[in-house]
Amino acid sequence: MNRTTIRFGSILAAAAAASLAAVTAPKLPQDPKPGYRDTPQLPSGWRVHDAERPRPPAVDPGPARDPVPPPADATVLFDGTNLDAWRGRDGAAKWTIADGAMQVNRTGDIETKAGFGDCQLHVEWCAPNPAKGESQGRGNSGVFLFGRYEVQVLDSYDNPTYADGQASALYGQNPPLVNACRPPGQWQTYDIFFRAPRFAADGSVLAKARVTVVHNGIVTQLDEELLGQTSHRALPKYEAHGPTGPIRLQDHGDPVRFRNIWVRPLQLERAAAPK
Ligand code: MG
Image (tube, helix red, strand yellow):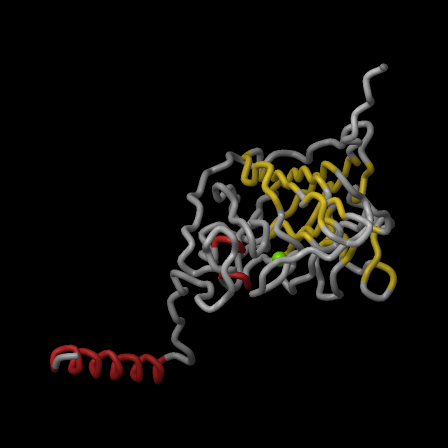
């Protein structure tokens, strides 16, 4: 460091002190590269929540649309009127219902009473407006298949965070192909196509889970292999489970809203041809 930078540094420090005196707390600029540099390495070579991993380019998905009606064979999980299909941490699901939507209210995650395996899942969500917080602290929720494989819900509109943690990321594993987020306060859609993992009787993995995600009509994950169940700052790994499990929605403390949730269980084993 030379004398000029030292002098410039002291001027900056004096200016900072002056502004501290003038206002209560100076607002620090948002970290342009939030994330981690000390986490384990994924098979891709990137670290879990790698601060340096390139963030996908933003693509405007066009204006929000009306709710997408459930097909005739869908199981409706939320139609805007009640939480009968859901349970909460200590029994009944207690998220707030208003204007045809349910809202996270810090009463904990909720999950479906019924279990689902291979499926097509439609979820509509809306991040709080005005936006509050930044990075993982802005409009964070999540859709967990089997209660353990998260497709991230986050207000990723003009909100830098680590690539594998933004909206429609397979959290901690795989960033979306593009950032298809709408601004906070606008409804967004996820269409998730999920092939559950298969386990042998001894618990070993016969086939990993596979996921396709369409965010606001734009494909963001195409038949991606899940490396294991979602974790934070750690490598994902599998723990054997049955052929079905609940769909869980995350209470991350942000008042994210959901509406129009339906699922179509998929029968992937085709009929055999006659001999
Ligand atoms: Mg989340």
